[in-house]
Image (cartoon, rainbow, N blue to C red; front, top):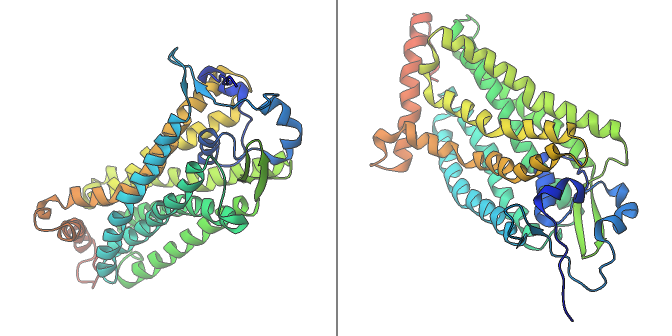
Length: 375
């Protein structure tokens, strides 16, 4: 039998793809897997619209944006390669950072902050290996209902933990630069420990709503189980969860970080810990496009040119955000490059020591005669 293909041009993405609930990386999963995560309450209404009557003819989406149509199956390779790179680079890199930071975390607060950030990055990198499986299997979810709730939640937990930890770290550096009397020595160590606990707890609470609303759904064309977000048709619930996650998981921490680093710049104190500053800046550079594009997708009118262009940019934006999870080890190596020829752990130690030496000089000036814990 002669086979035909359904042609889906990039400019028509906004018309052919339903609006997908959940976070932005979830919607990107949709594009690569041919709609595994849509609003489930609409499935019974949209089967005819989404799949049409093609009989036994294969549905092979193609990309015609350049004028020469090509099968979108080739686009599946890109996220698989990205996930593989994040796993292969990020897991050993962050394990190295965890190992080095853990040895120093007991007597250097800077190392303690980086230890928690590395754990959050490692959580995301480890998740990539399992999340690549549905991509390779054309959207079929093999990990069951519990895996549907936990694996995507691990990525969200990692994201929220990192941004909240960075906001707390920026506040720590700011209070230290201001010379607040209550932010030194054992008192500072105790409060920083509490701040990290609060950051992880808040990140977990921000992740829970999305995890609770995840469900497995049986598709029939083709036959597969897909993991999706289902708010039960409640636009109010979906909007509330999205707004709270955006404000508490990005906008609020961004305001804190910008305010704290503005104070550091005015006091010429940002050079005290270049590694810490670089970690903060790199996170927001990588994740800001993700959140901004999420706002565009939420506000764009259906079937609009803006929506189509945002959908085309979506995979690259999500890729940049996910790739950040393996960036911090490279920052360690850059700031410890003076010892890089000796060994990788030595370079990480040097990066921490260089920051410590710079910070100790400031702390000693503002707290002369007081016994301080090393940072």
